[in-house]
Length: 114
Image 1 (spheres, helix red, strand yellow):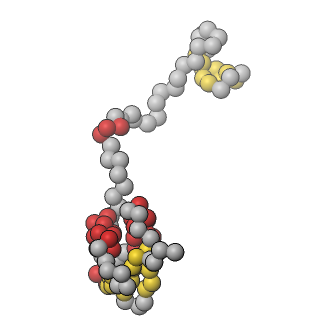
Image 2 (cartoon, helix red, strand yellow):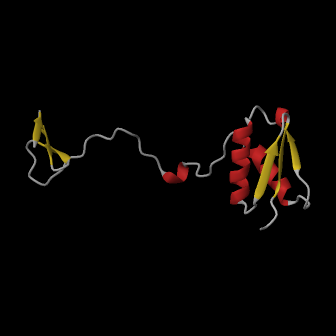
Image 3 (cartoon, helix red, strand yellow):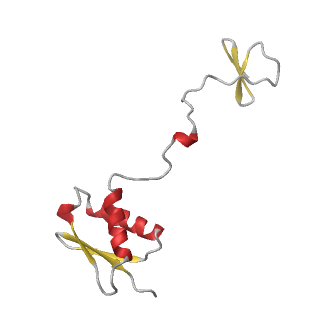
């Protein structure tokens, strides 16, 4: 037990110095509490609409075809971030994809079932 003014540290909690044994006084909250229903629960990153559009087009893509996405037209998204975001979105939509990139384009297509 350690004593700091009128507060005592005992058994993993702060108690008032004059409190009865077993009564634990909670310290003042450090963070504000909010209702969960007021929070946005979906993850929509800054390039959500871009990635969503790519996945929608992938769903209707003909076998043997790939989407060619010019990297200059993706709003400054780096290739690694774009590839990761497309893979995550495709996986959550149940699509198995493959990708490749060259100097100016990112290519994505539905992988052949194994």
